[in-house]
Every structure is written in structure tokens, then in C-alpha cells.
Picture 1 (cartoon, rainbow, N blue to C red):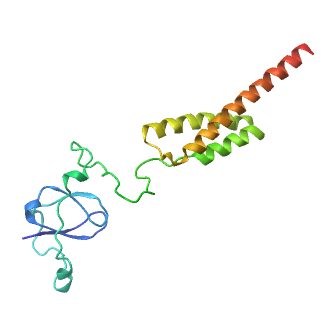
Picture 2: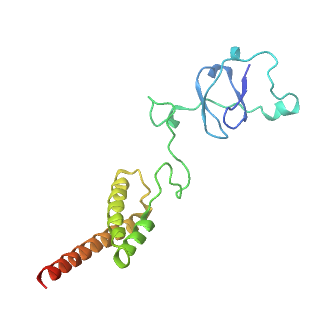
Length: 169
């Protein structure tokens, strides 16, 4: 007799073959992991659909298969993304445009933005190399880093020139 229960996350009605009792499963609707209960866990008269509603739920859902788990030691680990090419998966979004804008502001307006752009760019480029950040903004990040370095260098030269002018004038 199949095991019927509702997903605790999305409340979808699930029907699973009883030989999978006690194993881990994945909801086909919301992809959340759950423990497949045994038939003993349900009381007689549980509130599941009957009649025509029951006929619509005749699909059997299999437990989550091992290939879905990236790490066998952690069955709760998020499976790898198999979506379309534009999906970022679990990577952090890039901040390339923000870094580029900060570097331009530092060059023409407010010097500290150049320092901020340089520091942010170094951190983001390191994350992109490690693969934990979306690399699609790498060119903007690199450009912002270079402009940030130029901003710091020009302002450093300007400060030194002004100090020398003040001391020897």
C-alpha cells in the first residue's frame, strides 16, 4: 500500500511506494527534502483525497536519488543547478557596475570612492577566481579596479605635491 502525505513546505499531496519508507525524498513541486514516513506514522482516517481527487494523485514519486546529492555525507546539501545557461545557481551576484561607478566617482568627484572601488574589486575578483561569485561582471570589476588604482595614485601624487608646495613655498 503506498504512503500518502503532504509536503511540509508546499503542501503538495505526495504518494510514494511503501518500500521507500524511512528514506529521504525530494518534493517534485518545491524540491525540498523530507523523510519519507512509514505507514505506522499515520492514524486511521487521515485527511487525504478520496474519489476523483485520489485518481488524480495516482503518480508515484520516487525518493531522491543519490546523483542529486553533491556530497554523500550531507544529504541536505543543495543539488547542483541544471537550469538554463543564464542561471547563476548559488553564486553571489557580481558588483562590477557598482565598482566601476565608484571608481569613476573617485576619479572625478570624491577620492575615497576610488579606495572603496579598489578594495571591493580585489575582494570580488578573488571570489570570482574561487568560483563563488558570478563571473559575468569580471570586465567591469577589472576596469573599476584599474581606475581605482589610478585614482589613488593621482590623488597620492596630488597630496605629496601640495605638501611640498606648502613646506617650500
